[in-house]
Amino acid sequence: MKRTSLAPCNPIDTRIRCNPLLVDSHCHLNYLDDPNGALARARQAQVSGCLCIGVEHKTIRQVLDFAAAHRDVWASVGEHPGSCSGDASWVSGYLSERRVVAVGEMGLDYHYEKQVDAQSAQRHTFAQQMAMAEQHDLPVIIHTRDAIADTLSIMADFPSVRGVLHCFTETRQMAEQAVAMGYYISISGIVTFRNADNVREVAMHVPADRLLVETDAPWLAPVPHRGQQNEPGFVQHTAQYLAELRGVSFAQLAEQTSANFYQLFTAATCAEKSPESD
Image 1 (cartoon, rainbow, N blue to C red):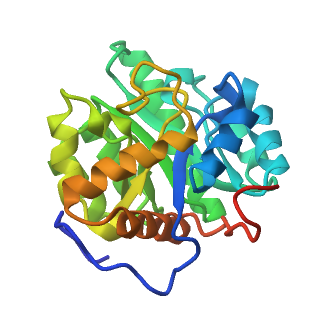
Image 2 (tube, rainbow, N blue to C red):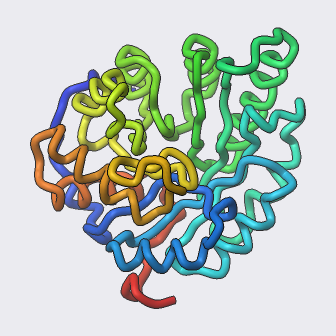
């Protein structure tokens, strides 16, 4: 696999021109107070699609049903490390359902979990889901916090798997290693926060063809909505901030990140209708 360092501004791949509007590559619509209203507002904000992320068994049906009901919403299925049960085998039973385009959110989070046994369980369920992605030829959505070495180690154990490190807050060195493995880096509204210099450092240098944008709604609303419940339409603020940070136009960044989304999540197809109606 070709190894790529973090360097700004690779050209847009013109073979993948779907919709130059924004895509929210990671949100949790089922946790919003008003998901249908938020989706309508996102369409008005020229957000052409949303990937609704599954994180636990007990709520996965909400995710799948919402995606099935809307032609501009897709779903992923996974067990988040914060919901770690020690056995994520349930995930495989949902990967063939309609509009499922990825495995995850999965990964490791040692920020709050310090117990050795619990961390071991997280590693086990992470590896389980990576194996499922390999078997089903689906991309993965990885959560990592304060677990750089173990996350990279498990990623390296599955070299054929592609995916994204979502809501990236780790080091530039980790981002470089992930990009070298063929992964994408997704930037959330955290990049607009005053104390997020490390995220800005990464966001400035991720290759353009490995960059995604997301909200992680209902959390982490970007400035100027910080403190409010986040929603997919707010991805425009993160994208505008990123465009200025990287010295490109908003249109260029929107087109590139949307192209990247469809390049990674190949089972997601562009909505044929306009964003204003189902």
